[in-house]
Length: 309
Ligand code: GLU
Image (cartoon, rainbow, N blue to C red; front, side):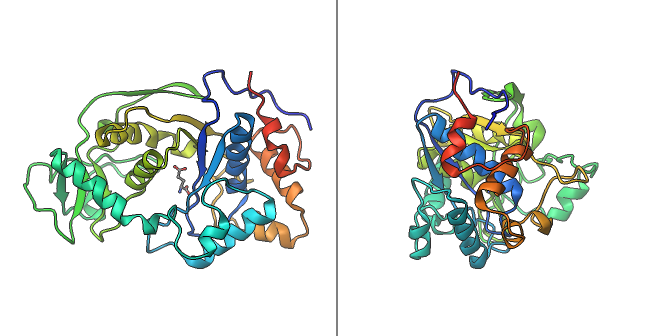
C-alpha cells in the first residue's frame, strides 16, 4: 500500500472523537465509503474514536430499511464504530439516532428562545426560491421578511435563529484558512421547518456539541455549512469549537457528484457484482485521492493512510 502525500497537520486534535453521520434516505454508495475511509482512517491515525450517528431528522425521506441496510453494509466493510454500535441501533431505541433526540433539540431551542434569538417565519419554500436569482448551485440567503413581523412561534410556522453580519474564521485541516459570513450565505438560519422537523444545520450542531465531537470529518460539499454551524454552536453556548476536515468528493464518470441515484456505485451492487469488502475500501480510498491506484485495503489498514507529521 503506497499512501498519497496527505499528511495530517500537527494541529490535528489528539485522540479526537469524530463521527460518521449518514442519513438513512438511500443505500450507501462509494461516496459514503470514501467518507468512512477518511473518518475511520483519521480517527485511528490520531488514536481517536468514531461515533455512528444516524441522521434521520428528515422524517419524510428517512426509512428504517435504509438504516438496516447501512448498518449491514458497515458490518460487511468491517467498519466498527466505538459509540453508536450497530447492535444498539438494531435493539431499537438508540440515543444517537436523531429522531429520538427531540427532547434535546427542544431544550436547546428553549435556550435560544430565552436568549431572544428566535423568530417565527411563515415563508414557503416557493417564496424563498422566488426571492432570489434562482441560479443553479447558488444558495439564496433568506431575505429577512419575517424578522420584524412579531409572529408567534406555533405549529405550522418555521423557526429561525438570528444570524447577524460577521465573519466566521476557521482552519480546515486539509484546506487551510477559511472565512465565511453566514448572514451573506444563508441569512437568519432555519432551525425547525413549517412541518415541525428539525433542520440538518440545527440537529448536527446540537449533536456535535452535546455528544462531545471535537473533530468533524465530512465531504467538501458541506464546507459552506461550517461557518453557520460554528456561529450557531457559539450562540448555543459551545465554548470550544470542533476542528474540521473536509475531504475531497469522489466524482461520477460524468463529473457530477455521486448520489444514491447512481445505483452502480451502491455498496450492495458492488457486493453483488462480486467485489470483496477490501476491494470496495481500496476503490473508495483511490477515488478520494488517498491511493494512487485501486487496491485492496482492510478496515484495520485505514489509519496507515493518514500518517501524522
Ligand atoms: N447527514 C449528512 C449526510 O448524510 C452528513 C452531515 C455531516 O457530516 O455534517 O450528508
